[in-house]
Image 1 (cartoon, one colour):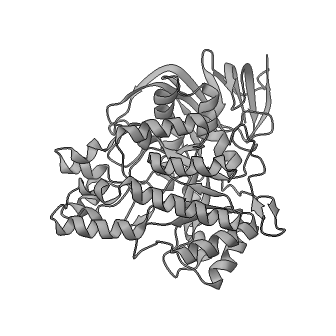
Image 2 (image 1 turned 60 degrees about the horizontal axis):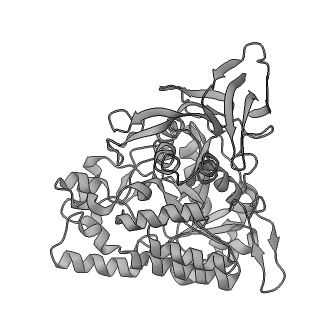
Image 3 (image 1 turned 135 degrees about the vertical axis):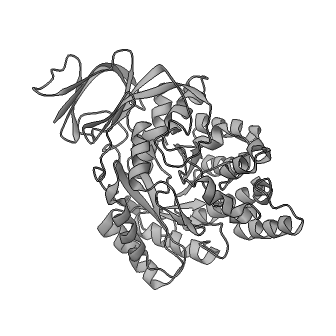
Length: 479
């Protein structure tokens, strides 16, 4: 099966140029002028449009058991929605329960993900520590293509990693050529603030951001960065939401430390006024951690993307319906944390980034695809439109518009945090693994079509205290 994308402007992270793109099987086989369509090929007219690498969402939670319930989107519905939005690869999370073997959890998630319609890969969380965790990390890296391990510094009495676990896991990741990632919030502070707010009778969703002020995020980010510096490992900070955390990243990077930051599409455009909405259900629907912040934090995050101290955009796609969120109607600490966005991310980032002049089209590609591929060592298989790369492509109409709404989304979440936002710049076609899976609103996602993507370990330098690990494909210009 062949697909020829004809007459568009190819946009990669380094340059944009007019060219046709020919896909055969699961790979791009040619990029150039005047390419001929093989017999039986599907031809996509990309005239007046951009042809870009498919998006990589570095942070999703499909079919996640969390806070006594399970997310509305499973691996099929969630990845199908991703394809409709131009995202062709998701990076999801295996989250073992405390004392659960990492390998047991990994195989459970792999089983759930067999229905995925888009390519997928996993970060594996380290939620506890003993020698079996040490051994399982080695097995995951060497035999299953896992090169990143997640650490929750929040969620006390559940999956929070204490400092001993952080140190031991970071050190082990360094030995293996893997990168630690962290959810940076001080879990003890959050817990104490939650109890104080409840004792004062503040029980609604408006208490959620009060229990997680920027300072608790910044403290954890600084602590994770300091641990990484002492051990000589890079570190990736997920869902950076506030200027204080961004400042910590910028300071470390200015001193030569390998610290990478991720911004969520929601945090870039939604502010904390949603928690004061008169409809409690509406406010609960926006509960996620870290919470949405005041507008000056949004401005800081955009500056982080522009200045190169934030590197990727993601969603933390974790959908719960209104009935699930209602479990916390009388106690905000019981509201399942999570919002959607895997379908909307690219359009939101384009509309709020490129259309405002904050990002160029090539910079957009960098923060929605290429940097993710480089940081997590799947470049140039992913993250570029070039011969030999995976045939994961989005054809993008910069003038096309769409009003985002739960009524028209493919996600099962039942709520859309971007409800009513009209975006300019939308995908018209998505090609995944060489197949045309989305065409002007017609979604042709197939359960099981997604491939598990193994990510090789990074090159390591193991001599002495200066030992380090770094993404081998990264360039200073991009990440």
